[in-house]
Image (cartoon, rainbow, N blue to C red; front, side):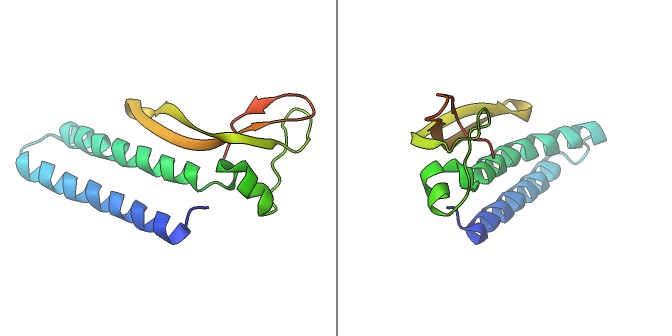
Length: 122
């Protein structure tokens, strides 16, 4: 389980990186138009956004099915409702807004009752 205080500190640091990056960009582009400023800010935020999404996904109790079960969190099959079983962790590579890559480590889960297999959401 991810430490929430550590996660919040990482997110604050990402926000500071965006602010510092924007200040540096603005100093280098003092005559930029509003559209150019907006594009530069969006570019900085998209990178931070992807890292925040990775952290938020890792902080989910469903990121680790066996640990979730041990903590009393129900991890049930969306098809039949039976308890899912963890079948190891894998890294999923996804793309989010702004064509930003994410790497999300999650438990793969399988249903012993109906055979469904999935990466639990959350």
